[in-house]
Amino acid sequence: MALLLAPAGSFEALRAAIDGGADEVYLGGMQFNARAGAKNFDEKQLVAAGELCRKHNVHLLITLNTLIRDKEMEEVLQYVAFLEKNVHPHAYIVQDLGLAKKLRERFPHAVLHASTQLRQHAAAGGKLLKELGFSRVVLAREMAKEDILSFVKNSGVETEVFVHGALCVCESGGCLMSSMIGRRSGNRGECAQPCRLPYKGKNPYPLSLKDNCLAPYLNELSAGGVTALKIEGRMKSPEYVYAVTSIYRRLLDEGRSPTPEELKRLETSFSRSGFTAGYYNKQVDPRMFGIRREEDKKKTASVQNAPRIPLPYLRREVTETPFPMVLPQKDPARLFPPKEQLGYVARFEGRIPRDLSPFADAARIDIPLWHLEEANIHGLEHKVSAVLPRVTFDREEEQIGKLLDKAYARGIRHVTVPNLSQLHLVKDFYLHGDYPLNVFNKETANLLEGYSFSSLFLSPESEPKEFGFSPMAWEALGYGRTPLMHTETCLIRNVNGSCPQSKGQCTALLTDRTGASFPLLRGNGHRNLLYNSLPTYRLDKRKELKKSGVGLLTLLFTVETDAEIRAVLEAYRTSAPPKGAYTRR
Image (tube, rainbow, N blue to C red; front, side, top):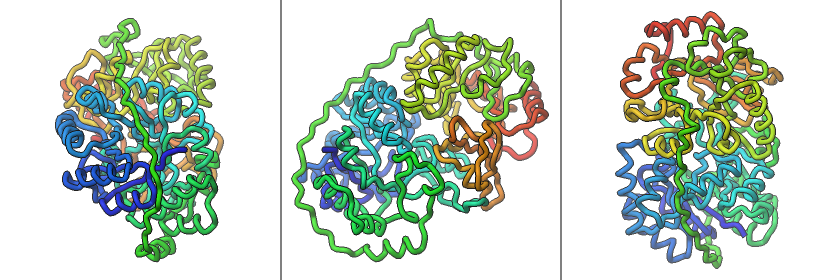
């Protein structure tokens, strides 16, 4: 039977989770966790939490699921040393690969779980994370039943699946919207939740998803081999934690689906216009969207003082062995020379110009893999890099493999890789690490260097000056609208009321309350990409960036006209100052 994992944003919520029958609980300290807005636990409370969990034979998982700056690394390690000595948690939930590397070096006996923020959708990613010392992977929320079961069957690592609670409309770990427009990073636990705000369009709340509820499917997930079933809610009340945990406990123990009364109680505990199982059932459509209505709030208020009776549950003894970290070994034969990676990268994520000859002096020309066949790259094949999809499921790998074979046959030898799960597909190419890899510190960069990346795109949230020089080429955004979200759901349809079948065109503008308009492009499949309303502009900062070790400036084109593209190219060549509205982030 799968383990039941419950949230605890406060000590009272921890007691509620235990009373409700959780096998495991997850919580965070006062920093370095993805719920900075929760009450969280100070050092004294952490010690008490460890004692309480041991008394009831409950696994205590500590969240370290944020990106870490180099200057913070030693502080995190000292914090973990305190936890190891005084709290004795069962495992740590980690997002930052650089931190995972340091944890494995300093605390080889510690058990590591890969956070959902690591954006894993494919079994190959699970295999790779196992090699890096992770015992369990928290799967991305966007996965359907077939994707989950394929991951369980083929990854060789423990799996954890979110079964109840809030859903992000953006792929797990890939949202930059709060960070770019409000300087509150979701990858640093500070998300301002712009997805819950109103926007202009057919659906006034086009980014707000209903809460997830997989209560009817617990037993098929458990029978399919999922290790742990996870309830979201460290920002929620103890009453919510007890109500949801206790219902899920009974459903698991009794091997049944929820009754109408139990579903009603779940909805009363917290919901946004009801629930959805759209990702799980592959019913990714407008029915997934909803908001927190006044009637929802009234229902919740009515159960705040309901009595809590501890469940008489005998918890199981479960042990988990930490995996050693097997660091990748760089293959010099696969590295593209750094001296040939100086200048700019022309990257096209919208319309691709018919004539690419003006970019013949580019160090690289990035074109999405699914648009390569329609691009005229004659004579520039040696410059082109095929940009892989940000999300790859097991069921999509065959199609991607065929497209890569076609690209190779055309003479393309470079790929831009946004997810480590794709590395096994691109062994015959030079590798360039894309920005979704979240290179936020030197430790992560050093680890990725072992996978024979010839260049790495530094996280848009990072400061290039913190990295310094490297045998790899550092890449940073010089011009263009930063991609803020990548979604499995069609936001274009929410804004316009329908979605045309054309690809690669700006088919919608998401306009907020201030009048700022964010372009929406359709990506591969029916996925959407949401871009910042203002372009980043650093073309006049080339010397400063070069001093920081950045040798490649990316010119990212999305909705620009041919004339605007030519103007940007000229501005790069002359290091011209910006004109019009722009941002430095």
